[in-house]
Image (cartoon, rainbow, N blue to C red):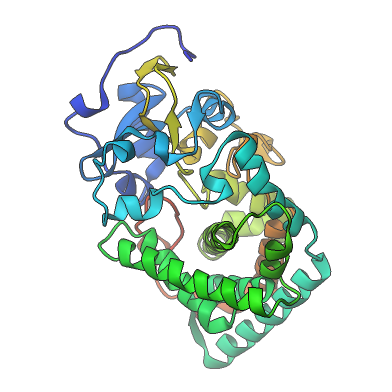
Amino acid sequence: MSLTGAVRVVRLEDVADRPLLADLAGAPDPAARYEALRSRWGALAPVDLGPGVPAWLALGHAEVSAVLRNEAMFSRDARHWRYEAEGLVGRRSATRALLAPRDGAHDRDGAEHRRLRTPLADTLDAVEDRRVRRTTDVACASALDRLAARGTADMVAEYAVDVPVRVLADLLGMTLADARRMHELTVAQRSGTDDAHPASVEAEDLLAGFVAGRRAEPSDDLTSALLAHPAHENDLEVMAAVGLVFATAHDAEIAWIATALQRLLADPAFAARLHGGRLSLDDALDEVARDAPPLPHLRLRYALADGELGGQAIAAGDAVVPAVAAANADRTVRAADPWEQVDARFHLTWGTGAHACPAHRTAPLITRTVVGHFLARVADMELTVAPADVEPVRSAWVRYPRELPVRFR
């Protein structure tokens, strides 16, 4: 599909200076890096997923929307990726640890995707808001009381991570020890380091044991509901569903919460708009999600045929990364006046099309509750480092501050 008229013909492998995707997401000013790529290449730029593993990075709002919505041209199934089909990605590489084909809804298209997504949608829709809010309230109050009594804290590890992991443990029926280990393994899988492959293997083993235990002793939790759903044909599909729920909720919740806390601690103007009533909490969280998407790059799509995108010829089997962080900042859809952005729901942070996030109710409820508790106590805290010294985690797939060290007044 061509969105610009003129067509450029560049083979991915022929570009010698492809930037590494993780370097873009982890840059101090990723917007400037995206803009530099856009100036040079247009709406589609060549990048490396890992050293020597190329992909197209879709930068424009129209192009990202097209990739996410057009299942006839772009597949989520990595078996259509030329580098996977031809064995060009190392079996134990960090890239393949994250992108290897699996048996879940995230990795299928069409009727098979709809069959596997139905249990996720049905199970998440059945979650009681009251239970989620109660579990989250207790975890927030306990964490904040404990940290305030101590006087110092890292509000990422000890709040933005700790509370969602506790909530996920309760919802999925995991022990807190297993949920914390899944957190560590999920971080390792997204790290782009040599730890990614062994972490992927260990996570599969943990999920297999956990799902088998829930099969033997079902309870009142999401995992038991997924096991009982008639659309699942075997426990491998349930494992994939549980893993998808944990990993996606883990990444999105932690990053969304941690970035909101960073804005409240380090951006007085943003905090004043919220405290002064010019922004509701929901609108403030939407602004954070739009300006600094928790998942700056969504999972890859793979071209099913030769075609065009954003004026660039693409070949069957090419990988395309939807850069929602770049798309959200696209000047063709974003107003120059920040006041006009309030309640502007054009952004693609949570995806669109068949693979859009199914937790459209539960995820905002958790985030709103966690940030709401923090907001009530933020006047008692101050950062112990300069805002400019707060660094993001290094990952191509998730962006949030590595640490937010504070002291309580």
